[in-house]
Length: 479
Ligand code: GLU
Image: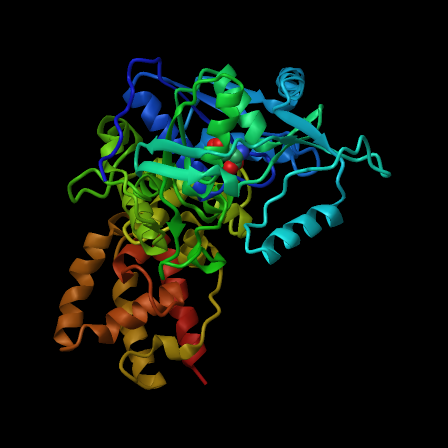
């Protein structure tokens, strides 16, 4: 199907319209990013609108979390945040007009009456919609709603990604547009705001696609020109099914931040959820995305959420970081793990440790577990870790003795990984199997089955601690 063309003649104005009813999720962040990129591409204006008309579910702390998350991702907006809760009189004006024009009406039917009508229609093989037919002026409990008299027609629109789409509005029923004059609902407030804010393009997730014909009909009834629509593909789990907790896609941006994902990696990852640059590049910065973004490359089919790819991208951005900067953002994780105290350690003390793992770090939260051994006075580990290829305790003690003797002769001033390698490698080679001394050394220094190399660790630990750890390892093996 032919994709529809972007109308450029109007000033480009887009919006993201989160409801502050929960944290900032991947899907909302993607909507924000695509709106942001669209605005950048066409020199447009990006507006942040907070859709907080649901008084029970909207919370200021969620609004704050969403705003903080967007700032952290680097997605800045040009206008807003504009809160719908502060615009009630505007919606009221349009509600009154709709009612006066008989395009909307008060409905006082009870949930039971509504359900009964739907069931009755179903029993006649008709779609279970509801249209209020009673003339009630009120309900016993005083509650009512305002319904839009849904015109019965075919609705067409040209989606910028999905092409021409049509709906039959006789299947919609008379939708509720407000609980009362002070409490408008999403579809209605959205239409009013898209018009009032002169939104030229509505870019949002495909989960909203069935709202679009309803919004178009409302807009038409109110005499508004509808914006152009662009629906981003659904985000699917690895198995192409609905998202699950396990896929990670339902994790909030704040949680990703807490786990030590970098905003650059998340932006890169989110951009690829339904878009690609048209070649095989996968690593793109926000600045590159701003240059490369094009609507034509947005896909129709579902975007698969691949958590491994996010790890891979994050690892790539971590590797590219300046060591000092990386160390600075690792430090809070070390404080949280109680390895260091806030303000108690210089960046320059930690950076050589971080340097050893910069290559293999996938997320910052991994750092405490990787470098914890540097901060301990004695290491707690099973003695079997010291054994190379099943060597017995006495054999390992011989290796450790040899290491202690050799290393104690190296001057403190010469204590570098190069010097250590220069001294120890000939001995290791002589033994015919380097592991015989390199493994026990590495294991004695780290207490771990896997770690950075022995010379690198020894260099960071320094002479004294290195010899002390060799001694402690020997004690473990001595009956
Ligand atoms: N408040 C809606 C949401 O959070 C906005 C949908 C739209 O962009 O129209 O999903």
